[in-house]
Length: 385
Image (tube, rainbow, N blue to C red; front, top):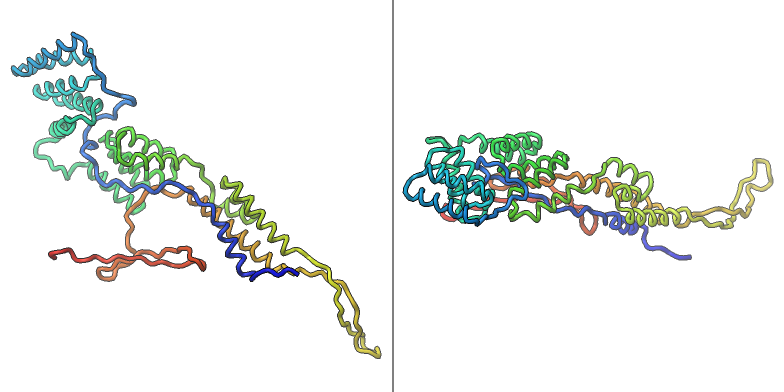
């Protein structure tokens, strides 16, 4: 008769098989906690596909020369008129937008100056004059004697970040919406609102906000990570309850439900093999002793009977049950992870003991099963303190 190894080793081997399906989504995105200088400008969002272009026709060169000559002699009105005519002939020339903004600024026409400076930034956001233009817009839009700390947009943005840290996703989305109403170029507000919508599982809204962030910041350093998250948000999602129930009903069906049919087929094959092993039976002749009723001269008699045995029942039923349960919970975990938020917030300690901060324990897999891991941090004294 073939002998199998210790039955207790089967559940561990099959449990490892059941965990193979994990959702390889992009890493979570960190919260943006400050507004950049470009975001605080009251400029509209650039039109999609807007690029700088120059018309070097003789008429444009003549008008630009007239505008420069008028600006040099201090005739801001004539300079403005010349640059306005030049802008009509070459609307994509950022040089004309800049000079026209300067002329409007010299004449005290603040709204028009801001509009031309914003047009310059839309046409040439990486220009060497961009920093100067942003400073001019800030000066034109900041009332004299105002306190920047009292800016309602900055206060709303800070409130939104605080809501994200406290996992109040709806309040965070509303706060960032208020920022966007005032500052339509606030790329960080679109980004953080996208994270809040993702945490609320409003994936279409999240994708739109993250795409708007990339539209405003096409050269952002984290554009690869943001695009990876957009792709992850467009992936299908599943119900954890349905995945768990289907996994219990039929081994591997939870994996099929979560769009991993080959893993489900593998789980079903191993579960079916284990169940067949457990139900495998053999016929064996056994001699048994039976008692006579009272009054017979002999107390008992022996007879040979055929009995059915399941020699591998324990070795088959244990891995079958373990695999069925493990695969069902793995499918539910996979389905639940498809709804996971893409935001990384500041982890708050669960307890403090002096300068030591303790965080909530994590359950981690080990070579023998599961373990509990505690983490903490201690604030070290700074040099010179």
